[in-house]
Amino acid sequence: MPKDRESKQTWGQLRRLSAFAKPYLRSYLVIFFLMFCSIGAGLLGPKIIQVLIDRHLNPLGTLSLEASVREAHVQAAFRLGFIYLLSVIVNFITMYGSDFLMHKTGAHIVTDLRRKLYRHVLNLPMRYFDQHAIGGIVTRLTNDTENVLDLYTYVFTNFFRNIVMILSIIVVMFSLDVRLASLVLLFAPVVAAISVVFQKQIRIIYDKQRAIRSLINTKLSENLSGMSVIQIFHREKAIFDEFDETSRAYYDVSRNEVRDYAIYRPLVELLQALGLAMLFWFGGRGQMRGALTFGVLYAFINYLQRFFRPILDMAEIFNIMQSSFSSSSRLMTLLDQEEEEYGKGVDVPEGGFVGKIEFDHVWFRYNHPEDALREAASEDATLLTDGYRGDADLSDAAASDEWILKDVSFTIEPGSFVAFVGATGAGKSTILSLIARFYPVDKGEIRIDGVNVNDYDLVQLRRALGTVQQDVFLFRGDILGNIAIGRPDVGRREIVEAARLVNAEDFICQLPKGYDEPVMERGATLSAGQRQLLSFARTIAGDPSILILDEATANIDTQTEQLIQKAIAKMAQNRTMLAVAHRISTIAGADQIIVMNRGEIAERGTQDELLAKDGLFRVLYELQYGKEVSHATSE
Image (tube, rainbow, N blue to C red; front, side, top):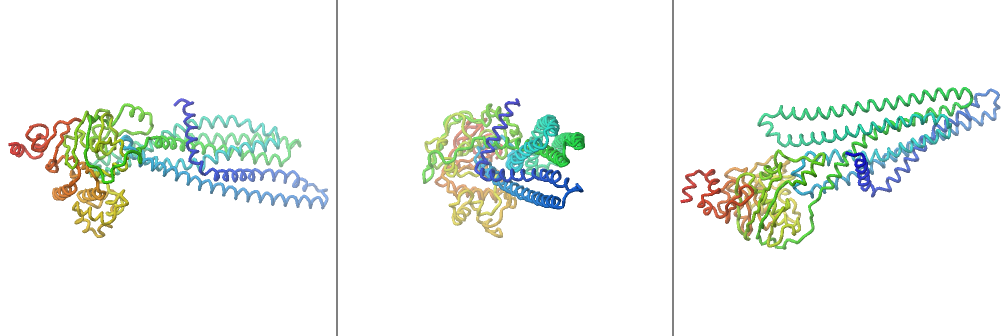
C-alpha cells in the first residue's frame, strides 16, 4: 500500500472512530483534566526534593549555622515534605479517577459500536454471507471490537499523556540547566528513528497476525460445526494437521513480534543508560566545580528516568495501536457494506397477497465480476468455493459468475400449487430465494399481484411469505418461542392451533414440559422430522399468504412424510404454494410442475402431461420409481 494512501486511511479511521467517542466528549474532557493534574503532581516531586536539598538540607550541614536559622530550615523542610506527600496523594487520586473514567467510557463506546455492528450484520443481504466465512465475521464482532476497546481506553489517552509528559519534562529540565538538558536531547533523534522503524515493522506483523487469526477462527467454526462428518470419515488427523499448520504460521509471526520487541526495548534502555552515564559524568564534574548543585543533579537524574519511561511506554502504545487500527479497518469495512432497505416501499395489503406470481424474463447469477474485484481488495473476504451452507443451487455457483437463471418466465395463478423439479444446481431453490428478495435479479422482473417485489416493503413481504426450508434452524429457548419467533403478536392459542394443524401437537404433548420444553442449539435433542414439523408450525402460525417449501421433506422418514403431506394439504387451502422437491411423491398433486435444467425451463405441465411427453421429467420419474411403473403410468 502506498505511503500516502496508508496515511489517508489511518486518518480516515481516526475520524470515524472519533465519531463514536463524540457523545462522551464531556467524559474525555474530565479524563484529560485529571490526567494533566496527575502529570503536574507527578513532575512536582523531583522539583520539591531539589529545592529541599539545595535550599534547606545543604545549609543544615554548616556547623556555624545559628539555632534560629537552623530551626527555620527544619520547619521549611517539614513543609516541603508535607507538600511532597500532598502531591503524591493528588497524583494517586487523579490517576485513579482518570483511569476509572477512561475504562468506563471506553466500555460504553465499544458497547455502542458492537450494538451498531450486530444490528448492521443482521441487515446485510444474503450475498454477503455467501462470500464471507462465518468465522471471519465472528472475529470482527468479538476479537476486533475488544482490540478497538484498547484504542479508546489505553491508546488515545496514554498517547497524549506520554507526549505531554515528555514535553513537560523537557521544559522542566531546560528551566533547571540548559546545558544538561541539551545533552539529554541529543538522544531524542536516535530514539525517534528507532521508534519509527519499529512501528513500521510491527504494523506488518500485526496485519499478518490479524489475517491468520481470522483464518484460525474460520477453521474452528467450520470444523466444530462439521464434527460429525469429520469423525465419520476419520478425518481427525488431517484436520488437526491442517489446523496445526495454521497455528504454526501464527506462532512464526508472533515470534517475529517478540524478536522486534526484544530488540526495541533494550535499545531504548541502552540509550537511557548512556544518558545517565553522560549525566553523571558532566553533572558530577559540574557539581564538583560548583557550577551545578547536588539538588539539580538529583532532579535531572530523576527526570531523565521519567523521560525514557513514556518512550518505552510508546512502544506498547504502538503495539496496541497497530492491533487496534488493523481491527478498526476490518470493522469499518464491515460497516461500509450496504444494508438491505427495510421500512420502505409499498405496503402489502392488510389481508395479504391474492397470490399471483409472475417471472418476466428473469436472469440471475450469484457472483459478478465487479464483486470479485471488490472482494479481492478486501483482505479477509473469503469466497466460499467449497460450497454453500444449505442451498444446492449456490454450491455449484459459488466459485463462478455463470448465469444461474437464464431468461426464466412463468406465471403462477392465485391459489395454485406449483412444484419445481430438476437436477442439483438447476436453479430451483434460487427461484424461491428471489421471490423472498434474498438476492436482487440482474435482468427481468418478478411481480406478486402485479407489483414488482422490489417495490414492496421488505419486512412485510417476507412476513407474507411462509418459507419452510430443508435445513431447519431452531434457536436455543423453548418450543413455544421457536414457533412464535419474529411474531410477537402471535399468542399461545394461535401457536397451539398451528401445531395442531401441521400434526406437530402429538409429539409436543409427549415432551416432559410440552410447549415449554427447552430447545438446545439447532434443536439437537429433537429428531429431523420433529424439527421439520416445528418449522411447518412456525410458518403457519404467521398465517402467510404464499407458502414456499424448499425441499421440506428431504431429510425425514416415510411416516413423518405422511404427516407432513397431510399438513401441506391443510396449509395449501386458499393459498398459493410453491415447492421444490426431489421426491416426486410429495408433488404428485401439484397443479403445475416446472422442470428446470441448467437455469432454464425445460418442461412444464401436470404430472400426467409431463410423463406423456417422454422428456426430462419422465427420466427423473423413472430414476425414482423404475421403468415399469413409468411405462404403466404413461400408457
